[in-house]
Image (cartoon, rainbow, N blue to C red; front, top):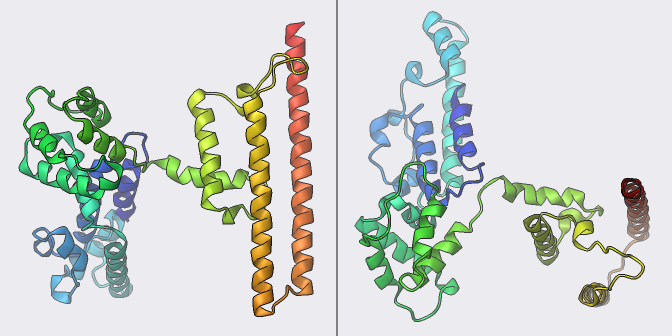
Length: 342
């Protein structure tokens, strides 16, 4: 069926590197309408607001006749050539049931009436000059007031921005981020609007968001799936720093002379303090666990303790294998570099 193409098109739009957060509301509305039009009469959906679409209850009189329901080109050809086939009626009944079930699921999952996504749509440069742009940007500033300077009249900036003739018109194919750069170049004129828009443009929706969680597979720990947020943030910060500088960890901290080179005291201090913080946190967690066990009179069973011990031993073996592999790779790299110098 061609439904996969409809869903894939929606997903692929936001898989690129270009910032399209201002298109999310419109795109998901288009997706929902395109899907519903496959089995619902158009007159029952085209005139409804996003909120009404989300709350709509499908009834039999709203649905297309079975012979008109979209089933894809091949199935439609078979339906036309074999109108009395024994399998046709149950097949179309299953198709209708699947459509209705999926529609209810989309109504539940898609934030069709999200005020946040609606307000983000006002970032679209094509809306500048319309009264709704000012209204939605004002609502957006209210949602982000905790990120903006307090007691500032941002509405005055919004009114001026909407009719500012010195800002160049948006050209088809131009990057929205580059266009907003013209506004950022006027820090004295639009300081608070610029701060708000920068916050909005920093919202990620591309494949890097999902791929960041794939990083957990690179952590040599069976409990990586239970990693807490501060640890994950720390790993992502380090990863971002290395990528932004275009260097690996070895390249960033490499010393020309390992034996007599100057030691980075700040780095050593940070390593020691991080280790101390980790050990202190581990002791606190262990103490809290003991207090809980003492309070409720519960103790870990022998089998649980044995399983925990085996897990720790396995993790230790995995770490040692990893260290050995990294050491071997580093030695091979040093040998290659030494040969090049000769």
